[in-house]
Image (cartoon, rainbow, N blue to C red):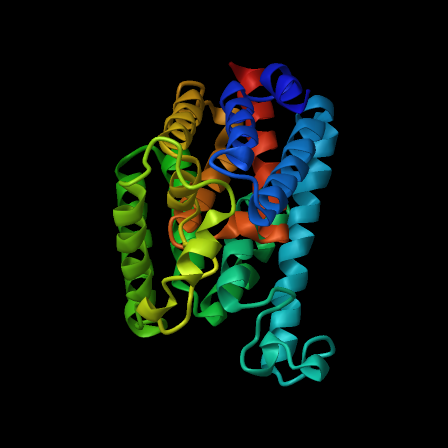
Length: 312
C-alpha cells in the first residue's frame, strides 16, 4: 500500500525501489540485518509519502527554515567544541573527545549534513549566514562534505549565471575543492578503494539479485583481515545498493535520475542543487545510513518532486 501511494503521489521509480527492497528483504534469505534495513527503508518511504501528499508552498518554506536551523545549530556547537567546551559528548567519552563534530558522531557526517543543508541558505535573509556555514565546512576537515558543497554551489551558480561566468565559477569551485584537499585534508583513504574492489569481485558472482538487504556488514566482517578498520558500510551508498539488491537497483536509480532530468525547470533549482550534493556525498560516504542526513535528503527529494510536478 505504501508503494501504491508513492506510485501515484510521489515518483514511480522510487515506488519501484520500495518494491525491490521488499523482495530483497526475503531473497536470498530473511535475516536480522535484512529485516532491520527494510524497516528503516519503510520509515523513510513513509516520510517521503507524507511530504509529497501534503506539501504546500508555505510548508516548504517552513521545512527549509528548519533545515537552516539544523545547520546553524551544528556549526555553532561545532565552534563551542573547538573552543574546548562540550556539554554532550565529553562526559560519555564520545567522538568529540578527539574531534569537534557538532551534534553528529564524526566529522564526515557533519560535513555531509552541512552540504545537504547548504541549498536552503540560498534564499532571502538566510544567504547572509552562508559565510558561517563555509567556515564550518573548513573546520570539518572532511573532503566528502566539501565535494558535496562544491556540487551544490556549482549547480546554483551555473543555473543563475548561464554564461561564460558559469564556466569561470565552475573552475573556481573545482580549484577551491582541490586546494582544500591538498592543504586541509591531504590524506586520501585508499582503504575504500580496496573495499570497492572486493565488492565488485563479489558482486559479479551474484549480479542479478545481489546478496540481500543488510548483507554488506555481515559479508565484510568476514573479510576484516583486508582492512585496518572493518567497514560496516561501503562508504558508497549507490554501490552498496547495487551490491545488496542487484542490477535492478541500478536500473531503477538510473530511471529516477532520468525522470528528474527530463523535468528540470527554474522553480526546482534549490532542490536540484541539493540532489547534486546528495549524490556526490553518497558516492564517498553513507548518508542514507545516518538518521539525520537521511531524513534531510528524503525531505529534499520530496521537495524536488513537488517542484518538478508543479512546473512540468
